[in-house]
Image (cartoon, rainbow, N blue to C red):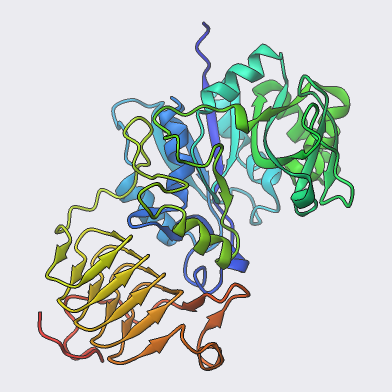
Length: 416
């Protein structure tokens, strides 16, 4: 089989306005996920596991946190010039005006590497995908462009960009959040939703970008792909057909989540919990790579811990109760604190006797002794964001400090 030379552009510039306040100081792909990951780690792991090693991240909005994460966690072989994860800011006089404009501004990179195909993938989703299977589909159908498509129930399809395709997958039309979505061929109860992940033949992409730029068009989904469909072979790849090794029988088939809102983000984090989670992040055959952090292991001095994940360096004191919760690295839970159904990010200290329920606590916070969050939404709304789903979000703390060294920082002063 011919070896494909593939260059990937990862769209990592999203502001994530609906994820505020978690995106107040970072871009959406840099938002932490689970006990050790960032959202960006999922698409990058999929690319690397699929044998795609030439990867450019196109960044824009509040990118410093993401840049630092990439520098520390995503250094692959420095000896091979075709293996890298590199960060690329806007190259023109203006910020990227859309997904197509972002790639257009980096046309020189395409001309430098001269790949056979170009993958343009989003950085905002939690999923596993063997992209080489999509590449095989693309080649077998002699496609000029392919779009990864997720089957969604017809009743929910009006919330998505929908693809109308024939039985072979060739796209006939695009529908933007239609009132009457076109059903999938052979599966009338579902419709194809675009996942925003694309494969292009390089020559076709370059020609389409030049044409779009001349027309003042800036977006793949709204401009380039609908126009390309009229003149070229554009196909929908059924994500449900993608088989990733090591996925367990209890996991949700074709798991994919757009974590674009706080409630969706919260729910996706909870999907990694349990003895049989809907999305099991532990899969040695298809690992999700992340930080090379080498801090201390978690320490459990006592307490009650049920269905929870603990990041490196976490410290849980006797008498603490932690249920259905994700604690990221170097969080501290003092005696008598109760933490239920929460996401506790790095370097957070939860002081003695505090009670938290259905809350997201961003980095570098001290939750004061006896504090109550998530038990009275009327009171919470005067201080914090409360989502339609009832999740309370405490924004990032005002100063950087480590939770295990907080004397004089306004905490309980409990000695380690």
